[in-house]
Image (cartoon, rainbow, N blue to C red):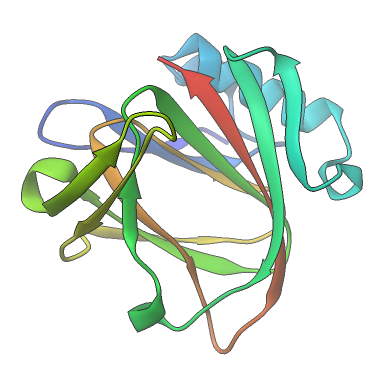
Length: 162
């Protein structure tokens, strides 16, 4: 299976696929390929919550457990220094996305590489165990949205330095 890519107006793709069946040669960013390859080779459900280093600040994975929330309780976020490769280890959630240029941006937190935004979704993906979505710095993304009611999720967010 090839990964499914959606290009924003700047030409950067939001990539969606399955960690086991996506053909890594179709993914144009080496850091994203490294994250997916690492996810294939490790039991994500066994990772402890918090930061797990892979290659220092160049590639690491933040693991969290939480309950998915109602759409109106979720916010768009974006990052400048990192690509997010989000992989659900257990549970299910929807992630909406939009090009940052079409959103109203809040203040950027340089130390946390984090910004909240307001806007309308252009795309939606459903993440179930084994599926992934990669969001580049031009992509605002709204994670954690409940699908048919709240679920308890364990998610791994690989942080890939750009």
